[in-house]
Length: 509
Image (tube, rainbow, N blue to C red; front, side, top):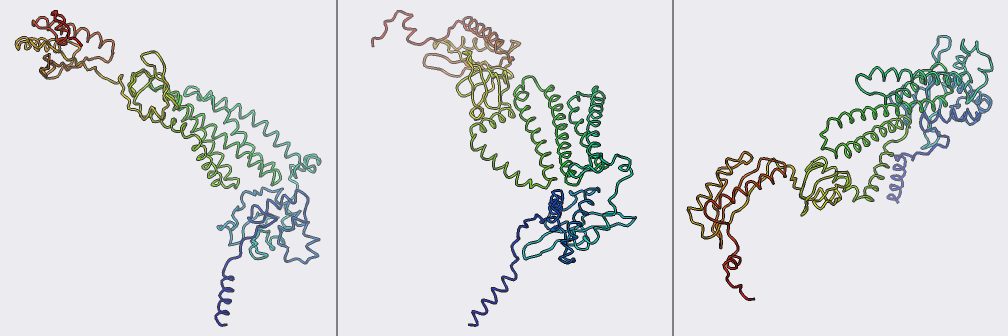
């Protein structure tokens, strides 16, 4: 029995120490910003009874709540809509702004009535276990009637026809909408004029015509944001308009960045070697598009983050989608990275003659997916870059000189004196030729074969033009044959052919 009581007591203590689970508030009062946003939505829908749930009326009797609560909500709506209150300044954190005032208390707005500053606050309450909500504090609710005295027509509104002041669209006097539309039209033309002026100013330096569009939209968004300080719509309308203007400004900035990127890429392309066509036509456009997409993605994510959306979840979704696409297109991605490897390492360039595998050809085009090569048969071979990058590539056009290394097979009956004369003559031919580069021993007697004496020639023709090499090789071979003949010997022939030339009978099979 004592053990059972101890176990029950331990369970009770453990339950008391375990925090109660969070309860989702049906009225959306989880954060200060969300609470005021939903409060204004209820007021604009003229549901002031619902709006009272966003006010702490605990210090009022039940009768006063039902009688005065809706009026207090209406007065607070007027205060927030007719002032410069910005809902974006409120915290989106369930814990509130920890740097503001004290824990569980956030500043809502401040107003000035006859030189006296009135500050309204929000307070975090827990009406029941686990249900933590943000409402306008009870002390601030008591100040709403006094603060409402600051709501009055401006001197400018008193001079306007009353219909423009009293008639409202989206809880905003119609004159403010007219002023904002007029400002937008004026800013559009002013922005166009300033954009053209800037393009003409920068024309001696660079072609900045692409900046006209983003500059015009940036001037429009910035100017309207300033105009809203003088003709502010109701809070919710102002919030959505400010978000739209922020999006326009961010996209205009990204647009300007992409135009600047195009200018830089074009200048770089003009300075590239004409043979680097793969960079000009493949990597440069792809890299430019990727950078542009990145710029716009950063701009959009920054705007979404400012709006309060969880950009980490968006990036995680993009990452999962990217993995799925990568798995579905493995060969394409392999060829893409192979193309990047070929283009960046540059083992061959467009126009080069190369040996790939057991074939030879001239590189016609290096793309991101495949490389096209024209063979000596005048056919065009297309090789996927994933396969091409893994091959052993021999760049024949990369030679700085061409190797000339024939082997002479002199007759077996060549005497040593004849051999010495041949070696001396060949050495003189090679060392005196202007297009031949020789080493210390360009001609050497390398062996005695079954039917010949072998003489090896090792030198380079100083030319990268293969046709010029062929002409020089022909000249050298003719002079070598003349040197052999002048030495009194001849080149060896197969033994069977020698017998046939002497009239010997052919061996029977």
